[in-house]
Length: 331
Ligand code: GAL
Ligand code: CA
Image 1 (cartoon, rainbow, N blue to C red):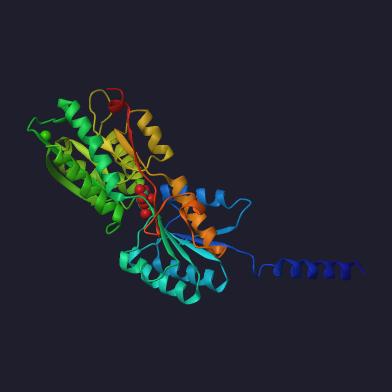
Image 2 (cartoon, rainbow, N blue to C red; image 1 turned 90 degrees about the vertical axis):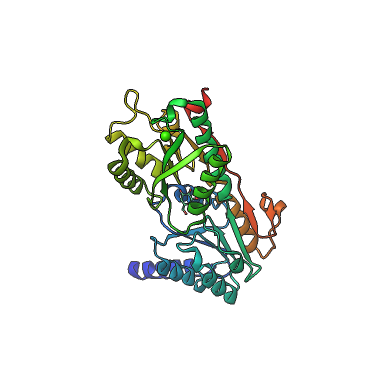
């Protein structure tokens, strides 16, 4: 008898949990790599928005586009009401948009901007990000500010800034535009430049460490400035510089990053990072969630309903902000 009751209890439990979900709304989120610090902040923002609201399922593509395609297919099959994607390879966006269009599942891209032609393929496609050019300009302004205020920055006194760049993933809009506008901004201020080296650290701290170590092996003290396309790589570079004897006594190296992650900010406060540019993870996550929520509920998102200004009807741009470190703000 007892066993029978137990079996019936379990059967009812299974019935209850498997029913009721048919028209429940759920938002699927796939991000390119869980180990990325900035993206981790964005996904934390998304999951905190979902508390007491439409639930989210967040999955890790582990750096593989194939895995991400399968995750999106699964979200579609399982009847998710909207999908947020931080694509592994932004050139794959067209295929994802097509798949979602066929199944009428709205899509919000974050952080890796699909090309305009792909965005134009369907009206239920949105993008939330930050203008990469602006971060390059702000990073360039921070470096220019240092160079023009501290004559000793020109270590060999030749009137030229010998610099290196530690880049993010090749082809990523943030890598290409940050680097381009950083350089352009310094040049526009009349600063002469010589790029000694550039290489990719793949956004990762370890990558920044390895790339900086190899730059130091090749050019040593000829390097006068370092621009890393994000804070994690800047922190890796600082570690390599410390291993080489920098940041003790008078051996200083100006290192600029981007993101203003908690560890980036800590390095600003202790004077290791010259400056960084705040990339607002919280608001990017929140805007993406709000758009996905509107779409899930069958509405067309508007600036008012999502709480962020929509440009061209389909884009939300969250502004960057320069964060000068001790040497720059203390002047
Ligand atoms: C950038 C960010 C990097 C990295 C990258 C991933 O916007 O600055 O730290 O997270 O996105 O796509
Ligand atoms: Ca010089």
